[in-house]
Image (cartoon, rainbow, N blue to C red; front, side, top):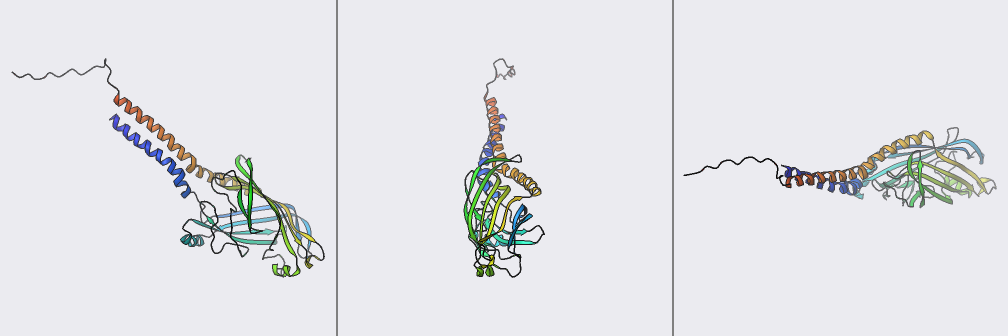
Length: 331
Protein backbone atom coordinates (compact mmCIF):
# COMPACT_ATOMS: atom_id res chain seq x y z
CA UNK A 1 0.00 0.00 0.00
CA UNK A 2 2.83 2.38 0.85
CA UNK A 3 4.57 1.64 -2.41
CA UNK A 4 1.40 2.40 -4.36
CA UNK A 5 0.90 5.74 -2.56
CA UNK A 6 4.55 6.60 -3.20
CA UNK A 7 4.13 6.03 -6.92
CA UNK A 8 1.07 8.29 -6.98
CA UNK A 9 2.98 11.05 -5.17
CA UNK A 10 5.91 10.61 -7.57
CA UNK A 11 3.60 11.02 -10.56
CA UNK A 12 2.12 14.19 -9.04
CA UNK A 13 5.62 15.55 -8.38
CA UNK A 14 6.62 15.00 -12.01
CA UNK A 15 3.40 16.65 -13.19
CA UNK A 16 3.96 19.76 -11.04
CA UNK A 17 7.61 20.01 -12.16
CA UNK A 18 6.51 19.89 -15.80
CA UNK A 19 3.71 22.46 -15.31
CA UNK A 20 6.03 25.04 -13.75
CA UNK A 21 8.07 25.95 -16.88
CA UNK A 22 5.04 25.45 -19.13
CA UNK A 23 3.11 28.04 -17.14
CA UNK A 24 5.97 30.57 -17.26
CA UNK A 25 7.29 30.11 -20.79
CA UNK A 26 4.24 28.83 -22.70
CA UNK A 27 1.05 29.97 -20.96
CA UNK A 28 2.20 33.43 -19.81
CA UNK A 29 3.17 34.80 -23.27
CA UNK A 30 -0.24 33.71 -24.56
CA UNK A 31 -2.43 34.69 -21.60
CA UNK A 32 -0.90 38.08 -20.71
CA UNK A 33 -2.32 40.65 -23.12
CA UNK A 34 -3.98 44.04 -23.33
CA UNK A 35 -7.78 43.70 -23.64
CA UNK A 36 -9.20 44.95 -26.94
CA UNK A 37 -11.94 46.95 -25.18
CA UNK A 38 -9.58 48.94 -22.96
CA UNK A 39 -10.67 52.49 -22.04
CA UNK A 40 -8.40 54.95 -20.23
CA UNK A 41 -8.51 58.63 -19.39
CA UNK A 42 -5.57 60.65 -18.11
CA UNK A 43 -5.54 64.31 -17.08
CA UNK A 44 -2.33 66.32 -17.01
CA UNK A 45 -1.75 69.92 -15.95
CA UNK A 46 0.79 72.66 -16.58
CA UNK A 47 0.75 75.34 -13.86
CA UNK A 48 1.76 78.93 -14.70
CA UNK A 49 2.25 78.02 -18.35
CA UNK A 50 2.86 80.27 -21.35
CA UNK A 51 0.11 80.14 -23.97
CA UNK A 52 -0.33 81.92 -27.30
CA UNK A 53 -3.39 84.13 -27.76
CA UNK A 54 -4.19 83.51 -31.44
CA UNK A 55 -6.44 86.57 -31.53
CA UNK A 56 -3.56 88.97 -30.84
CA UNK A 57 -0.70 86.56 -31.67
CA UNK A 58 0.99 87.33 -28.35
CA UNK A 59 2.16 84.93 -25.64
CA UNK A 60 0.82 85.33 -22.12
CA UNK A 61 1.18 83.54 -18.80
CA UNK A 62 -1.92 81.64 -17.69
CA UNK A 63 -2.52 79.94 -14.32
CA UNK A 64 -3.17 76.51 -15.81
CA UNK A 65 -3.33 74.51 -19.03
CA UNK A 66 -5.07 71.13 -18.95
CA UNK A 67 -4.36 68.19 -21.27
CA UNK A 68 -6.91 65.37 -21.34
CA UNK A 69 -5.67 62.15 -22.97
CA UNK A 70 -8.10 59.35 -23.76
CA UNK A 71 -7.49 55.88 -25.17
CA UNK A 72 -10.44 53.83 -26.35
CA UNK A 73 -10.23 50.32 -27.77
CA UNK A 74 -12.02 49.59 -31.04
CA UNK A 75 -13.00 45.91 -30.74
CA UNK A 76 -14.53 45.62 -34.23
CA UNK A 77 -11.40 47.05 -35.86
CA UNK A 78 -9.19 44.72 -33.80
CA UNK A 79 -11.11 41.63 -34.91
CA UNK A 80 -10.96 42.72 -38.54
CA UNK A 81 -7.18 43.23 -38.49
CA UNK A 82 -6.62 39.95 -36.60
CA UNK A 83 -8.05 37.99 -39.53
CA UNK A 84 -5.14 39.03 -41.76
CA UNK A 85 -2.46 39.65 -39.12
CA UNK A 86 -2.75 36.18 -37.59
CA UNK A 87 -2.23 37.42 -34.02
CA UNK A 88 -4.04 39.23 -31.22
CA UNK A 89 -4.27 42.92 -32.09
CA UNK A 90 -5.40 45.98 -30.14
CA UNK A 91 -6.61 49.17 -31.83
CA UNK A 92 -6.54 52.28 -29.66
CA UNK A 93 -8.23 55.51 -30.73
CA UNK A 94 -6.42 58.22 -28.82
CA UNK A 95 -7.20 61.91 -28.38
CA UNK A 96 -5.02 64.59 -26.84
CA UNK A 97 -7.28 67.53 -25.97
CA UNK A 98 -5.66 70.75 -24.72
CA UNK A 99 -7.73 73.47 -23.06
CA UNK A 100 -6.87 76.81 -21.53
CA UNK A 101 -7.83 78.18 -18.09
CA UNK A 102 -11.17 79.37 -19.49
CA UNK A 103 -12.06 75.82 -20.56
CA UNK A 104 -11.82 76.64 -24.26
CA UNK A 105 -10.08 74.31 -26.68
CA UNK A 106 -6.47 75.12 -27.58
CA UNK A 107 -5.86 72.09 -29.79
CA UNK A 108 -6.93 68.49 -30.22
CA UNK A 109 -4.94 65.76 -31.94
CA UNK A 110 -6.52 62.35 -32.59
CA UNK A 111 -4.49 59.27 -33.44
CA UNK A 112 -5.03 55.57 -34.09
CA UNK A 113 -2.46 53.20 -32.57
CA UNK A 114 -2.45 49.54 -33.67
CA UNK A 115 -0.24 47.07 -31.79
CA UNK A 116 0.29 43.46 -30.73
CA UNK A 117 -1.76 42.68 -27.61
CA UNK A 118 1.03 40.57 -26.08
CA UNK A 119 4.29 42.35 -27.00
CA UNK A 120 3.07 45.94 -27.63
CA UNK A 121 4.95 45.95 -30.96
CA UNK A 122 3.27 48.08 -33.67
CA UNK A 123 1.09 46.28 -36.20
CA UNK A 124 1.03 48.12 -39.51
CA UNK A 125 -2.46 48.24 -40.97
CA UNK A 126 -4.76 50.67 -42.74
CA UNK A 127 -5.87 53.40 -40.37
CA UNK A 128 -2.60 53.87 -38.48
CA UNK A 129 -2.66 57.68 -38.25
CA UNK A 130 -1.81 60.79 -36.25
CA UNK A 131 -4.12 63.79 -36.74
CA UNK A 132 -5.35 62.25 -39.99
CA UNK A 133 -1.84 61.71 -41.42
CA UNK A 134 -0.86 58.09 -42.19
CA UNK A 135 2.14 56.96 -40.15
CA UNK A 136 4.21 53.82 -39.79
CA UNK A 137 5.27 53.49 -36.17
CA UNK A 138 8.36 51.78 -34.85
CA UNK A 139 8.98 51.13 -31.18
CA UNK A 140 6.43 51.60 -28.42
CA UNK A 141 3.94 54.27 -27.42
CA UNK A 142 1.94 54.79 -24.22
CA UNK A 143 2.96 51.43 -22.71
CA UNK A 144 6.09 49.33 -22.23
CA UNK A 145 6.11 45.53 -22.75
CA UNK A 146 5.28 43.13 -19.93
CA UNK A 147 8.42 42.39 -17.88
CA UNK A 148 10.16 45.60 -18.94
CA UNK A 149 13.93 45.30 -19.13
CA UNK A 150 16.62 47.69 -17.92
CA UNK A 151 17.51 49.02 -21.35
CA UNK A 152 16.65 51.73 -23.85
CA UNK A 153 13.53 51.42 -26.00
CA UNK A 154 12.42 53.08 -29.23
CA UNK A 155 9.56 55.44 -28.40
CA UNK A 156 7.20 57.02 -30.95
CA UNK A 157 6.66 60.78 -30.78
CA UNK A 158 3.27 61.84 -32.16
CA UNK A 159 4.36 65.43 -32.79
CA UNK A 160 7.34 64.62 -35.01
CA UNK A 161 5.80 61.34 -36.33
CA UNK A 162 9.17 59.66 -35.70
CA UNK A 163 10.70 57.27 -33.16
CA UNK A 164 13.83 57.83 -31.08
CA UNK A 165 15.45 56.08 -28.09
CA UNK A 166 13.97 56.67 -24.67
CA UNK A 167 16.74 55.95 -22.21
CA UNK A 168 16.64 53.80 -19.08
CA UNK A 169 18.03 56.00 -16.28
CA UNK A 170 17.85 53.67 -13.30
CA UNK A 171 15.56 51.99 -10.77
CA UNK A 172 13.65 54.18 -8.35
CA UNK A 173 10.90 53.97 -5.75
CA UNK A 174 7.70 55.83 -6.52
CA UNK A 175 5.21 55.93 -3.64
CA UNK A 176 6.33 52.57 -2.32
CA UNK A 177 6.47 50.88 -5.74
CA UNK A 178 9.69 49.86 -7.49
CA UNK A 179 9.78 51.48 -10.94
CA UNK A 180 12.15 52.01 -13.86
CA UNK A 181 12.80 55.63 -14.82
CA UNK A 182 12.99 56.50 -18.54
CA UNK A 183 13.78 59.83 -20.17
CA UNK A 184 13.75 61.10 -23.76
CA UNK A 185 14.76 64.50 -25.13
CA UNK A 186 13.28 65.58 -28.45
CA UNK A 187 15.38 68.44 -29.88
CA UNK A 188 13.85 71.43 -31.61
CA UNK A 189 12.06 70.00 -34.66
CA UNK A 190 9.73 71.54 -37.21
CA UNK A 191 6.30 69.88 -36.89
CA UNK A 192 2.88 70.20 -38.46
CA UNK A 193 0.21 72.42 -36.98
CA UNK A 194 -2.87 70.64 -35.58
CA UNK A 195 -5.68 70.37 -38.10
CA UNK A 196 -8.11 71.77 -35.52
CA UNK A 197 -7.11 75.26 -34.38
CA UNK A 198 -8.74 77.39 -31.66
CA UNK A 199 -9.60 80.32 -33.95
CA UNK A 200 -11.97 80.04 -36.90
CA UNK A 201 -10.24 80.72 -40.20
CA UNK A 202 -6.79 79.73 -38.97
CA UNK A 203 -5.83 76.40 -40.49
CA UNK A 204 -2.50 74.68 -41.21
CA UNK A 205 -2.95 75.67 -44.86
CA UNK A 206 -3.52 79.38 -44.17
CA UNK A 207 -0.59 79.47 -41.76
CA UNK A 208 1.66 77.73 -44.30
CA UNK A 209 0.83 80.40 -46.90
CA UNK A 210 2.19 83.09 -44.56
CA UNK A 211 5.52 81.28 -44.30
CA UNK A 212 5.16 80.73 -40.55
CA UNK A 213 6.31 77.35 -39.20
CA UNK A 214 5.73 75.51 -35.94
CA UNK A 215 8.64 74.08 -33.90
CA UNK A 216 8.60 71.81 -30.88
CA UNK A 217 10.90 70.34 -28.23
CA UNK A 218 10.25 68.33 -25.09
CA UNK A 219 11.89 66.38 -22.30
CA UNK A 220 9.70 63.31 -21.74
CA UNK A 221 9.88 61.36 -18.46
CA UNK A 222 8.17 58.14 -17.41
CA UNK A 223 8.16 56.08 -14.21
CA UNK A 224 7.31 52.55 -15.40
CA UNK A 225 6.24 49.58 -13.26
CA UNK A 226 8.41 46.82 -14.82
CA UNK A 227 6.17 43.77 -14.26
CA UNK A 228 3.16 45.19 -16.14
CA UNK A 229 5.07 47.69 -18.29
CA UNK A 230 2.57 50.38 -17.34
CA UNK A 231 3.68 53.96 -16.57
CA UNK A 232 2.52 54.99 -13.10
CA UNK A 233 3.60 58.60 -13.58
CA UNK A 234 4.72 60.82 -16.45
CA UNK A 235 5.63 64.40 -17.14
CA UNK A 236 7.02 66.60 -19.92
CA UNK A 237 8.93 69.87 -20.07
CA UNK A 238 7.23 71.00 -23.26
CA UNK A 239 7.84 73.98 -25.58
CA UNK A 240 6.30 75.07 -28.87
CA UNK A 241 7.12 78.11 -31.02
CA UNK A 242 5.86 79.74 -34.21
CA UNK A 243 8.75 81.03 -36.30
CA UNK A 244 9.09 83.45 -39.19
CA UNK A 245 6.55 84.45 -41.81
CA UNK A 246 4.19 87.37 -42.09
CA UNK A 247 1.81 86.01 -39.44
CA UNK A 248 4.13 87.18 -36.66
CA UNK A 249 4.32 90.78 -37.88
CA UNK A 250 8.06 90.84 -38.38
CA UNK A 251 8.97 88.94 -35.21
CA UNK A 252 11.40 86.05 -35.55
CA UNK A 253 9.45 83.78 -33.23
CA UNK A 254 6.71 83.65 -30.60
CA UNK A 255 6.04 81.06 -27.91
CA UNK A 256 2.91 79.04 -28.64
CA UNK A 257 3.10 76.96 -25.47
CA UNK A 258 5.63 76.40 -22.70
CA UNK A 259 5.04 74.51 -19.49
CA UNK A 260 5.96 71.67 -17.17
CA UNK A 261 3.19 69.15 -17.79
CA UNK A 262 2.46 66.74 -14.92
CA UNK A 263 -0.17 64.11 -14.11
CA UNK A 264 -2.96 65.34 -11.87
CA UNK A 265 -2.87 63.94 -8.34
CA UNK A 266 -6.19 62.05 -8.42
CA UNK A 267 -5.14 60.26 -11.61
CA UNK A 268 -1.83 59.26 -10.06
CA UNK A 269 -3.65 57.49 -7.22
CA UNK A 270 -6.09 55.80 -9.60
CA UNK A 271 -3.27 54.63 -11.88
CA UNK A 272 -1.30 53.21 -8.97
CA UNK A 273 -4.26 51.16 -7.73
CA UNK A 274 -4.94 49.71 -11.21
CA UNK A 275 -1.27 48.89 -11.83
CA UNK A 276 -0.85 47.19 -8.45
CA UNK A 277 -3.87 44.98 -9.15
CA UNK A 278 -2.61 44.01 -12.61
CA UNK A 279 0.88 43.47 -11.22
CA UNK A 280 -0.44 40.74 -8.91
CA UNK A 281 -2.07 38.93 -11.85
CA UNK A 282 1.14 39.01 -13.91
CA UNK A 283 3.25 37.82 -10.98
CA UNK A 284 0.80 34.97 -10.47
CA UNK A 285 1.71 33.64 -13.93
CA UNK A 286 5.41 34.51 -13.93
CA UNK A 287 6.47 33.88 -10.34
CA UNK A 288 3.97 32.77 -7.72
CA UNK A 289 2.48 29.76 -9.51
CA UNK A 290 5.67 28.52 -11.27
CA UNK A 291 7.75 28.66 -8.07
CA UNK A 292 4.87 27.30 -6.01
CA UNK A 293 4.57 24.32 -8.33
CA UNK A 294 8.31 23.66 -8.08
CA UNK A 295 8.18 23.73 -4.29
CA UNK A 296 5.12 21.48 -4.30
CA UNK A 297 6.93 19.11 -6.66
CA UNK A 298 9.91 18.92 -4.31
CA UNK A 299 7.62 18.25 -1.33
CA UNK A 300 5.73 15.51 -3.15
CA UNK A 301 9.01 13.93 -4.27
CA UNK A 302 10.29 13.90 -0.70
CA UNK A 303 7.08 12.27 0.54
CA UNK A 304 7.24 9.71 -2.26
CA UNK A 305 10.83 8.78 -1.44
CA UNK A 306 9.96 8.59 2.23
CA UNK A 307 7.12 6.16 1.62
CA UNK A 308 9.30 4.07 -0.70
CA UNK A 309 12.04 3.87 1.95
CA UNK A 310 9.56 2.76 4.60
CA UNK A 311 8.09 0.14 2.27
CA UNK A 312 11.55 -1.37 1.70
CA UNK A 313 12.66 -1.26 5.34
CA UNK A 314 13.19 -4.84 6.73
CA UNK A 315 11.26 -5.94 9.79
CA UNK A 316 13.03 -5.57 13.18
CA UNK A 317 14.49 -8.81 14.66
CA UNK A 318 12.80 -8.32 18.03
CA UNK A 319 9.43 -7.62 16.51
CA UNK A 320 6.78 -10.13 17.69
CA UNK A 321 5.93 -12.68 15.06
CA UNK A 322 2.77 -14.60 14.56
CA UNK A 323 3.20 -18.24 15.73
CA UNK A 324 3.39 -20.72 12.90
CA UNK A 325 0.28 -22.68 12.29
CA UNK A 326 0.67 -26.46 12.81
CA UNK A 327 0.88 -28.39 9.57
CA UNK A 328 -1.34 -31.40 9.10
CA UNK A 329 0.52 -34.70 9.30
CA UNK A 330 -0.54 -37.69 7.29
CA UNK A 331 -0.05 -41.27 8.36
